[in-house]
Length: 227
Image (cartoon, rainbow, N blue to C red; front, side):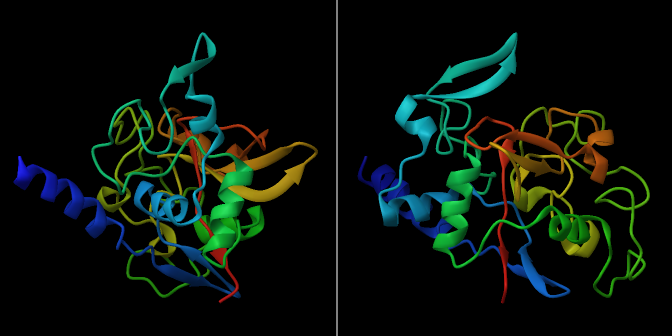
């Protein structure tokens, strides 16, 4: 019993040490991975932050319309402990994502920044042609993305187990939608699509506006920085 308790205490602490590298894209930086459960938990623990999903006691999943799922939040995305703390943090609204990014001295990327990072190879690469703008975050062809027609994990996946795409970034296509800072009235633009959609939605034109206070199993984010 004592060993089990010690393991429970040690494992989360080691995972909180996970670092999400910044990748320089022209005049800004963007995180290599989607913000993870470990990272968001660290923020929440240090600031006593509670998401709306936690306060309300449920998250959302699409079934016969948007359906409430008891105890679904970023800590327990499917109502139970996640398989890995390096899965993306979901059930997080635009405003909550914004607060997290501010906490780490960053911000949400604009859609223009996000799109440059996702589709235009800015960095030297052995795989992609420098300065070329591609159709998908995976290149000319839709491949190796967590969407219904490709990797098809049928749920979001550990970001450390997904392949790199344009500019060495991971999961810019599929896995989870990502909030950008672009707003229209009470909505904010999400980009990249999620595991619930086909790869056709991972193109630039596939971006969708969602209510800024919305949170669901399909939506996460990553941060951008000035330096």
